[in-house]
Length: 319
Image (cartoon, rainbow, N blue to C red):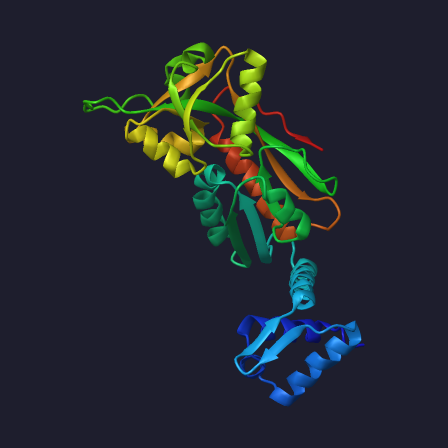
């Protein structure tokens, strides 16, 4: 049977290099042997995988589907190999973690620093993405772990609630800054009611952004209407607009804590009611998690727990 691990490795290399001759040089095999292997793979599958031309090769529609499967299978094989060789005290292997920009600001530096110091055999891949795509990354195997703000995804995923992070109003800095930046510690922030917030000109993410959906739920439940003057989905843009005095916005405290500490923006806690957003760690409920991925998942939980403001509720639960 031509569908072997070696055949998949060769096929992926051929597509990646765009040339059978370059792939042969990369794999250190003879070009005729590699061409024969690819033809045998096509005959075994009963489809044409590659468009061949004088310029090189490109995958057909069937080849593109085969490429996705081959990469996932080879990744799983690498994970299995690393998993059976490692122990809990010295995890090894590649771990992919997908998360939003706001969570990346909190986690990337301490997680990578800890990994380099304590897990020399672990290779971390941080994938920054909109949370709407993250469950799909985990389901498809493109990410081992993901951080999301909702657990309303596929049944093939397992969700662990880590924390309810607080949302804050992000406002322009004072026209004349004093020597001392305004308060940035969460519990020292002045409060603003939801009614007062509804009078401010706001720039918010647009639908279907998860934060906007959550804010719309608060509006409906509390029967208030935000004065949204524009939409922008990227966190840096929202912070920049507030800093420039164009408008106010609403973000998680961690997403804007550093800018507030520098005095670039002013923060207010939202009261009556306090606005929070749940953070979940998701993983596949079908595929086994490697020891390295388990170690990373545990460390992510610890970092988030350590960053939790005093008195903030912690309600860990798994679904």
